[in-house]
Length: 93
Picture 1 (cartoon, rainbow, N blue to C red):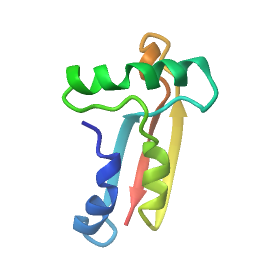
Picture 2: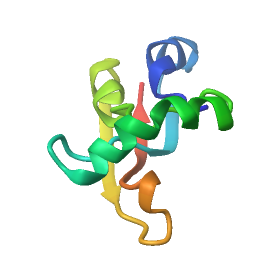
Picture 3: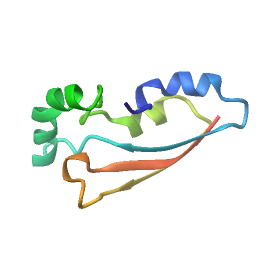
């Protein structure tokens, strides 16, 4: 299970100046075939992968958590088609 939904709690428990290093798969762009497939398969994914969501917008949640700075990057791993794209980076308290 990803930590995106728990970002406000992560920020709360970090020491001042602490960092949150993250790598998460996130929802594909709205209106794409991949996003449609992720939406259709999301309930099955949650059951088979211990609550993991294909449609979470974790990057957005990290930005909205109120960290003092966020360095967020996006990547696409061709071998992980349904788990594309991924976000990675560092958020600082």
